[in-house]
Image 1 (cartoon, rainbow, N blue to C red):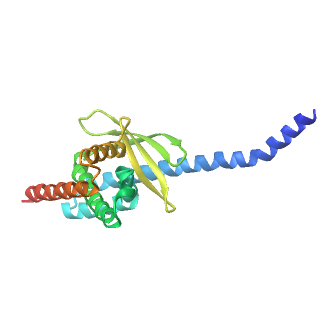
Image 2 (cartoon, rainbow, N blue to C red; image 1 turned 90 degrees about the vertical axis):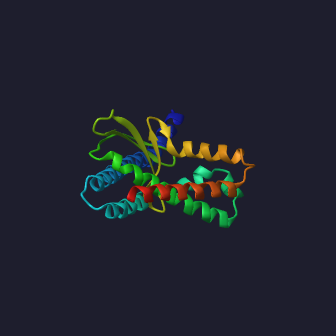
Image 3 (tube, rainbow, N blue to C red; image 1 turned 60 degrees about the horizontal axis):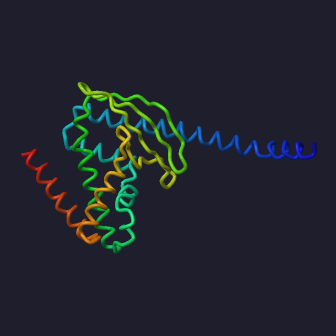
Length: 210
């Protein structure tokens, strides 16, 4: 009887904390879902606008800079090699990764003209929240895209996208690891490769503009 009373007392004392944790998790889920919904709407508004390309570029850039944890993704993609890089190499790598990622995102967004999205389940995880969406493009099959949202310096940021279950940052990390393992774990070799990729990217954009 005494044991039962102690258990009841312990549960009663624990319940407010449990209730707070549940409420906080639900609040985080609602916040993440609202954040993803707003980002998707902002991107769609720019894509469907009649703004000149240079204006769209700047608007895209502002949205991405404000909503994507670019530096965090870059460090994740480099994995254990980040600690092997010198401070100068880290700065070079971050700058190149940022420009390549931004160019790649902006370069593909026009393919999503007329896109629609719906918000599905939101799942609170240990360090982030996963927001499930369905993306529908005209003439295309619906795509299931999960947005991984984390708190970065007090602000929600996208740290990964899972397209049909495939993590984009894990795929990129695997590509980088494979390259480095075939190049004697030489971070500078990867930096040089990224610099070459950026030059090719810029050349292709210049040809399209011309």
